[in-house]
Image (cartoon, rainbow, N blue to C red; front, side, top):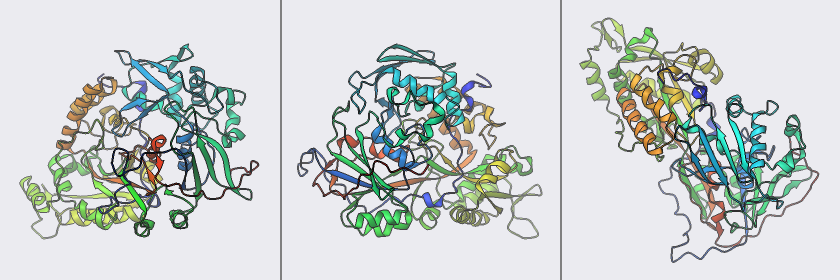
Length: 576
């Protein structure tokens, strides 16, 4: 285990340098309205079946196929209601039963046995069996589909064995504790898709007449002329977790968040997929709109190149601690991010099973930071100036950052905060692609402002970014070379016991807090808005914004609004 050069060492997160200010989510609302009273509250009516819930999605439809929806959030949102998966994850990131009602893991962590529900049915009435699961895995293995290469390679490496119609075994080439993350894919019905070659799946008409096994089934496309404006679903009577309370769910597509809000104002929809900063103030003026706000699985942080000897002072943890203490993150959140984030405390997200909630947040204290630098023998040059020196070497470096307006503003604020400590920072704005290809991957940077996007990755698995083996050719862009931290990550990655993994990750976080190989800055938040007529919504931390539907079969309408008129046109086609 010293080098951990294993098959699975390259799997997990992809680094995303946030270039998408337009995809920012709304801030934590201090004065948000309380959601409608829920069952168990004596003032709340008992949930009843019936009614229509209509939600505005921002974007367009492409393909309602869970193997083809990863690049289009509106498709992924609709598919969340149409399809079922082997397992699902709760708000703290622990696996829960879905189509697989139970599973077992061998002691060595390489063999997984799954028992499927015997009462699961496809929307056309046929039973869901192991054959459907195996067929879907074969599609994930296919080179003909646009599956991410790392996902395809993983499924090509595992062995899948059918025991009977409702039990199967998946065997890994070696232990990989985050493997359950890879079992949340939507399952396709073999009897619908087996006659279609994989290379024809992308353009198959079945992508717009989907058959799944989720709580809602496809009813029709909502069209105007030959243009698809929405998708109408109806409750699936034989859903294995019970028929949903709401009879119909209609998704309507809008090009912008402002259009979605206007649709709510005009009574066309009852919910809005997300409240972005540009519509927040207007949304707050809607008297009947409830807001549900939670943390997103993303993090903004500053990486240091600890292997760059031209800035060897960054290898001194006292310098890194002083730099962290000198950042006024609260000001940045309030003034630059419009309150749309929480201060970060480490590389693992709060509210999840692996997070150590006794970490000490680093407070803004520039005077203490200056004192720390003085104690480490960094002084203002005798000839004057603001750059601190030690042995004639100045505390000066370049911070490379994405060239979008939000990251540029953050970088400027960081530079000003550090200038107050006597540290000189030169800013270099580059495109997302160049930041990754010209600076991070070749390790030619000194410091970098980046975002990590861990969407759809409930398991924390910090291994790819912080393990020694990933410092060369991997995603350990900071080149942090800490053997003890690497041992914690190695063991946590091959240990199926959650309690043992939790202890290992606690130790890792404490060590990270002490060493600070990078500076975690913010966790952004997501805000979902739904009319007060809709009850039963439960929104905890999400790993994808489609997680807002995790208990959609328990939603209900306090009052039943009239549905928006829809036009059925079976001949309409979607834009690829």
